[in-house]
Image 1 (cartoon, helix red, strand yellow):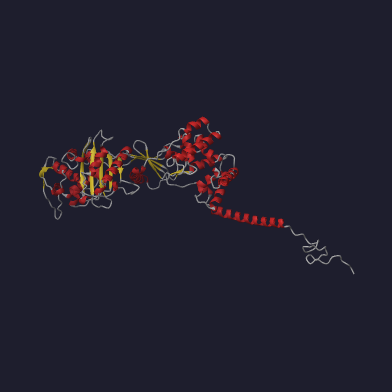
Image 2 (tube, one colour):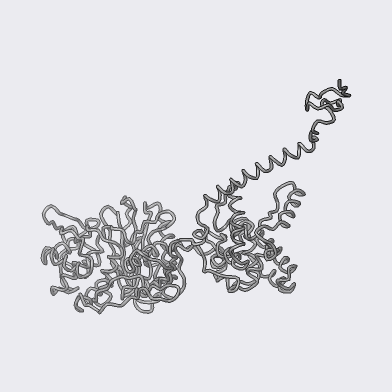
Length: 615
């Protein structure tokens, strides 16, 4: 019988020395709690890493093509230019002119690098040193007061991503940052940032900011101006030199100090630049040009078609100073007449050759984009020259005696203003006093067809009703059309067609459209023109309905008021040496909803607006 020193172990089955904690000394040793904790942590870490890797893969798969994201699609930018070569405004401009590190003065991009990412050229996609430094700063402050994003990260965020603060967006930012660093050089990444960063009014790029704030290109920015733009990168609105100039200037001074520390500029250059920091005046209000540019845009598409694939420079016929003056007069005059139940006005001014110099389509474009200069309204007595031209062409003269007395054609029995009749008067006096019976009698004598044919020769016959009420202005037309009728008279009887565009170019200088003046075409005999001009002059003299429009250089005009004071008009002309050139100017006042005004006639507010614009 074999004697064993130890009994069999219940755990391993071997005969080893029993241990106090169970088992024997031959049992496999259990790992310590430290090793077990390490193993658990390693397992959890691997699981977390796998989950994170899977999440990053899912986020990456949900991203659109990175190459396609670089190719931003946008509507072509349209820059409108006035008759003197100055920019009026731009449409669809969401980006400035593309710039690069090589094309800019060094201080422009250096001001950005100095304040946003001083180690930009020395680190990769992430600036770990900057992140650590920001963490320490935030810990000391007890709040988020500093960021550690590199310029590459900011470029990724500005170009591709929304401003939402989510885990998904942050992961996408990191993916994009590494992609940018691997695909592009540092200068190319900086170029992307310079051209895509958003600073002013929804537009992107340093050049757009330079144009909007300082009315110059990014290539022309001074050190001070570059610092003020760089100051906005922290928060465009909070550090705007327009809205918060004190904060902008204070941060710009910090940027200048950083540029000195990083040896981008000298201390003397920084001191000079510091004296040149200033609050920026808001850009001019271009809304007073919007009715005009909307009108020009329609004309542009009629010339080029709807398929436009290039930025455009549209050279227009506008007189920018006169446009501003007319808009200011309209706003002041109509506002002062609010108690007379009038809310809107429109003004059009054209040269004898048809070049449109002014178009005011209403008081406030922001409040309503409806263009009253192209709206259909009843012209009232301003249509009467068409009838009188028929009479003059048929042998009558301004001195011809006619009879002003109550007159009816069928059931149509219009009355004179204030029911006043003058009996036997000259044709010129009947016109100047804008009586109603005489043009109706002339129409009966020469026929409604002759009146409609004359209107057609003057360019407004297409939509006129074949009714006697048309003679007194019951058929609707636009202010542009009515002004054109009078312009033919003052253009020595030659046909004139209003136009607003001289030429259209691409930024490279390629001509897409250039206006060719039509051959002169006489539509009125000179005898009729001379007599009609004489009658229009009489209408603005004392005793004429348009006398309020009379001032130096005004050579004639005509008033008009539709039924129940719904529309009031004045169309007049200036001679050589007034304003800037010979112009025909049309004015309308009324209400969009066709409600009557409080006894406002063409000889009152419209004539006064005309007078103030010319004077």
